Amino acid sequence: MRPILTAALLLPLAACAHAPGQPPAPPPAAEGACSNDGLERFIGQQASSETGAALLQASHARTLRWGPPDSAMTMDFRPDRLTVSYDRTMTITSARCG
Image (tube, rainbow, N blue to C red; front, side, top):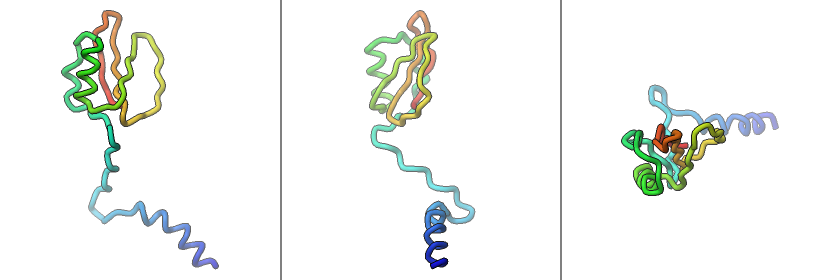
């Protein structure tokens, strides 16, 4: 009985192992996953529905969350979401996935 119990406890750990000298493989990208590549070009632009549509297209995100000035936002990570913050003049200050 003990060998079976030991094997059952060690089996999940074996799934995490990788070849020595090799970095672990990254997890597969989720469908609709957001990409930060190239989003810095939107910093300084005016926040608008047209800019939001361009941000969604550039990031491949499924959803867009606007972050108004002085607002609180949840810290939950969603790989399919783009969060765009703007200041009081409606100028985009950051654009990041999550």
